[in-house]
Image (tube, helix red, strand yellow):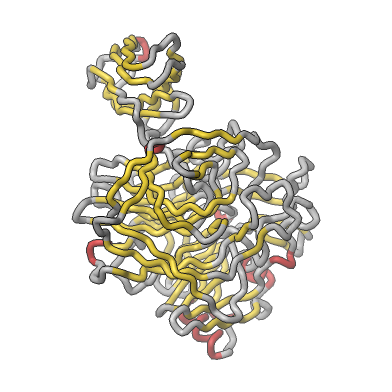
Length: 535
């Protein structure tokens, strides 16, 4: 989770203009408690016929700072848990009948996982390895027959015949995500963390980010798993992130994809990313025009798409973030605290994205390392995005949020002795309610630009004019990126005035060709435009 060796402890208030926006839907969450179900966070899950199979994760809260207590084996989840949210029952079985290799990986934390048909595929994870008497990132994939294991545990029958495990060093990843886009699997982001966690600056571990997207094809006949690795996508700047949210998407062109939202940490500073990375079968692209402020750490996320409006919505539930809203003020806390914000990021038909704070909140500082478990019988695309237009009822139960870290205070990272947070046992039913005239969400205009940026002529031969509006006199940074997010040029504009500014830029000497991204930044605003170079 957080690996801060140093923190900028700034607390900054940024004035924002909050605009009332008619919401495409509203969200309601309703608590559900199941007797005997314990708390859990950072786990993997699959499901069949409405019942959940849960593996791995932690029984405690935020990892402690004391090296001897951090990721203590006593906090490992050494059971497989079955939950029926309809009958409100739960069952469990220990891992002891499985091989040591399976036991260790299936009791690890922050695994990557994806369910395809009956099989839940689990990759990597960080946990204790008896052979080395230390902790490591497991370099394995496990395939679990979900219906068979659920039935066996409920009936009290043996489970050991329903697991297969293969070893592959490419799968030594924790804190990333595993998604499938059409027929290809994408192991996105994350890192390899080997050794005992130690935030005190002692060299008791090695940590290497994947800085990439590892693609592969998988063939499984129920007996043998065959992996065919594809070329790796590497970007040490934009894909250097872990513990983020990877959300399946339907893109504006109607094709399947996924978006990597936020995550930690930027290479130059221990703060979350604010931008996102869009991934589809053709490749990936960084979206520098959008800034996400409210939900930066892995949390439960609900994806919905309206084909009628060609709008993609991703709803984030609580967690950890660098920003939160306080009475219309966007508060920047570089300690990156626990938050209770529920926010929606929406993408329109033109691909423009904006962030909205919903009027409903999590009931406490809750949500980090929780999961959204969908109602599988509802209309969905192949990648798990809900078909919003096909919802028949005014109010639809779309899924559940289970577990996660519950914190007693926003900033506990430097005082954490194990009592300030816990793994939550709480379940929430999540309802989507079709919008009414009174449905209002608050647009976070900081996620979009108010600078009124214009660039002309466009297309340009390299010489162009930048026009923008400033509410006060200040310097402005201008950055030119290519479509992969690589910085081409950066310069600072000084001696600007309040109001409209017009600046000419002669850049023929760069000898560029094609489409690029021009971004201007002030202390609290950012605007971006696409530029087409036609030399």
